[in-house]
Image (tube, rainbow, N blue to C red; front, side):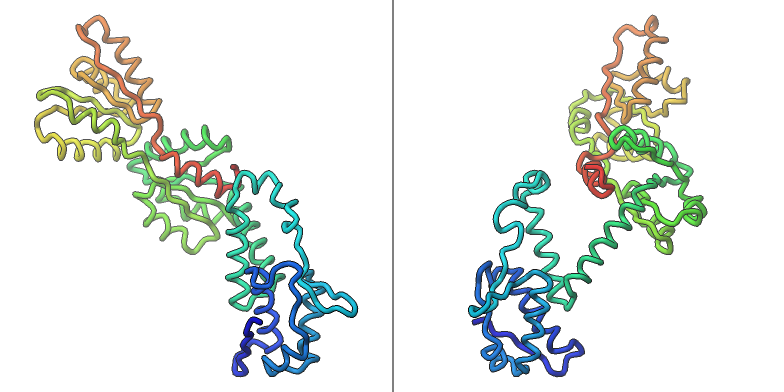
Length: 328
């Protein structure tokens, strides 16, 4: 028989201590379905509690559906809905076979801390309700000097999530959050510290996004012949600066690196005429390069090779965001 321990000096009533320990024994399968609970006499001898107190605990367990009383036989652990396999056949559990174990563990942890099942349910529902309310409005925050990276994130997120996304300059974020009761703020991990400071007093979630490491493209750039010219285009001036630093670290002065945003027609024209390879971090920049190339085609003997990144935001981050927002 399991040993239940009652701490007489605890702030938690003795009956609640015993109730939670039996719940935990059932939830952790130490008391499996159809297991016969100890008699009130045996449990009174073990715990030092009065039999009437133990009977009250058993009645509460029965009211909550954990056990059932069989006349003349005793108190038995009830088979819950999932024990017969019906719950395990649900589409959610087929898609996420470990989900139920995660829920069980979370409940076990809450019960071990003294929560009742009703309190645990309230905690779960409150968290879910808050997240749903936050998900109703999604903001992308980016600094004004690199608003292009925000435009890039908005474009990809709207395409991936199929919901409207609002772009907010980081410097104006506090004012926007003052006007909303709940929201989810999304930003690049590069800016997460600043955004969390702004959002801390507000009723919002902040979710950082990881960007692509562009490892595949950088490997290609490592193999460019000396004295080659590499063009890089992006909506974000911050990305352009970072790429220049990374490439200088990889190749030093062996290759010439030209950078441009899609709106800078003069730089794009110079790039398509000079570069052997042009890499675009986003589709808008890629389209601008293609247009510039068409204009300059008559003046070019050998057109540059054009490369466009599939996306700026990492796929894992997008999938995680979908789940956080309840979209998949």
